[in-house]
Amino acid sequence: MLAKAFRRSLTEDCHVAPGSHVLAAVSGGADSTALLCLLCEAAEPLRLRVSCAHLDHGLRGERAREDLEFVRALCARLGVPFYEGRADTPALAAQRGGGVEDAARALRRAFLLDTAREVHADAIALAHHARDQAETVLLHAARGSDLRGLCAMQSRSGPFVRPLLDVEPEAMRAYLKEIGQPWREDETNADARFARNRVRLLVLPELERACPGAGRALCRLAKAARRDEDYFSEALSALPPVKTRRLVNGAACEAEPLRALHPALLGRFLARWLAKHGAPGADAEAIGRLSRALIAGEETAAMLPGGLCARVGRRWLCLTRKGEKAQDAPILPEGVSDTPFGRFAVRPARPGETGDGVLAQAIPLSRMSGLCVGGRRPGERMTPLGGAGSAPIKKLLIDAGVERAMRDSVPIVRAADGSVLWLVGLRPAEGCRVRAGEPAALLTYLGLEPPDAP
Image (tube, rainbow, N blue to C red; front, side, top):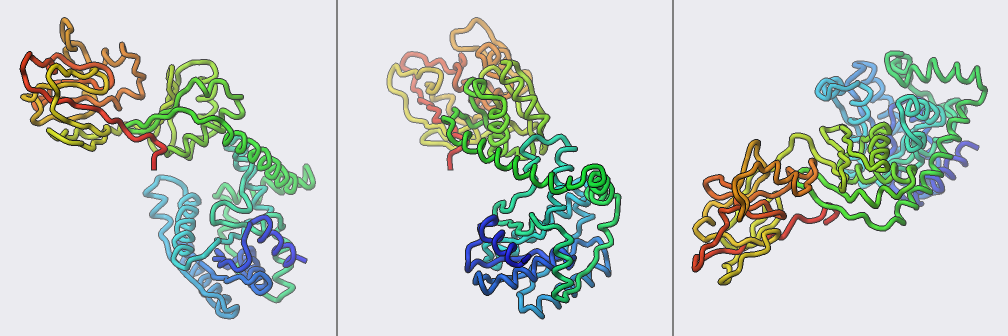
């Protein structure tokens, strides 16, 4: 009965096509041992190629080596290719400053993806089951997740498949006993120092006593959340494109169209947009804060993992990398120059040609040697062309309505002596004045590629 349900889940829920090569992640515990045995049973009717990957996390010494030998011997008996790896989880946890659980998860994922690429596997099978799913829903809810987090684990996410997600662990142990297959016990599963173990050993049993069937109900909640998220995903895909801009240290999108969205859709748009532009770890609290500011027409900022900052301004939502500034780059005296601030083209200016001062500007030929472009500098000033005196660059940017998060992305063209010649996109400096009959070059700003460009 379990073998039949497993095959159905593998093909229908996990979308593993007949003839696929499946790499099974096997620790040697009951769950992953059952996974491997069930895959081998399904291999002939589904024409599958089955391989096995096992990672020693560097946490359990001799016990881990015994696990490895157990899985190696199991694969030899089943005729399954075996791939092993070793990692130093404590070292990564110390380096990241995080927990051992998170470090182990990251190392395991990287190992499985690398192995799958090397052996050309079509899918990576994981042994997560219904109890794991219930634990995940509880943990995500307790950590402040919104509906997206309550979706918990999916039957398929990228190359990873979980064909046992609807199966109780007791059913897998019964299956192993029925076929006479032993398994290994990991003593760390009883260590209550780990958050998931505390939920498994203490919280879920109490919840089951208070509300019989709570675990299954949590799994149903995850499926309902996934159904609703699929609907919102379709609604997001149907939205008209929102104007975006690439920044030197991030990306921006126009805020006004977002203010018309329903809060439920807006939050999901923000989560997708932030993830797309380098901030997949934005939590529900940060997204809620940004959503409320957008709807109210207020300005706010939210710090995100990885030194990223999302800021809502009057016209733009910006995502920037805190403290990151592009280095000054030279502008060639002729032709096209590619710089971190975009592309610049230089050609001889025609007599009387001055440019518009926004995207094109004439500069005396005598000032073209050593020309460079960079970002703003603390305390820097310039005298606008035709102006009465010098003014701080910061004030000029504020007066022009350049939002705070976008000021570091304004290209500033400087002469060899460091004096400011042009605030690109805004106005030139007095140093760009071309006298009658004086030879000049026309500097044209071709811009940055949009953030969605390939």
